[in-house]
Length: 338
Image (cartoon, rainbow, N blue to C red; front, top):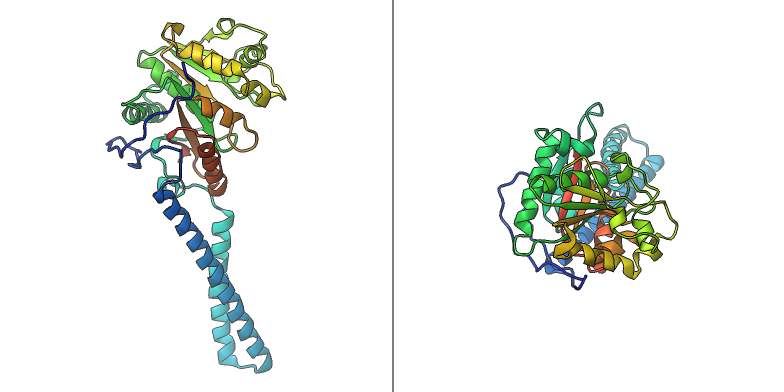
């Protein structure tokens, strides 16, 4: 079975689910007119701000030069007023450039031409583990958010249900692994047999969440050291099994780019594998090529964005890298929303 499946190009989808932005998913074979217009607007705004800053600096220089040559009390008063106003404007531009994090769904929609499929709220640090909110606190706000994500995914992919879903993020610590566990739990609770794979061979976390031994895992299979069946382990969540990453390795790219990963996905997506869905918790996009190798082999990819943490430029760069690797990006999960 071919591993380079992609979902068909989507038409705009209307949903009443909370947190669903009606932006059509699209194929990644080329650049759309909407993307080009979006890039043009961003470039134009940056040019306008740069020109305005230059005008302000030249204006202030001329005023100070005139004041030095011909002192005047009234002119000094107005000069102080104008200086304060211009300083505030310049400071606002500087702050916007340095504090360019995603703060709202509206800002996210301006940066990425992707549908926002789920909004996961932050919780009190004294609460139970965020990753197991869906399993242990099904009535919590987090569990409700991931149920909405699960429902939105069913709507977006109703024409062609993906068998392999990849979840990644721009950088580390944006809630990717916790989102993977919560989403896998929602699918498992709906009656599907789910396999969750930790494909982050450099900074694995799933075994820590489930308090499992990590001496063997995905890396062992990719290196030809262990069979696939021997690495699949049950969890306390009904219908949910996992494969941990295995020992940390500096050769992640070599292992993930080999044929064993294709064989693994091919074996698991077959009807006799015992699993209805495979969810891959992959590494962040920025940095190494690990996430791109995994995304290219997956049927669908979700991009996690942390509210007030993920920066706009790295996020857009991550999106471009995924698109260039012919990844089928179907939507975004926004985490840590206050």
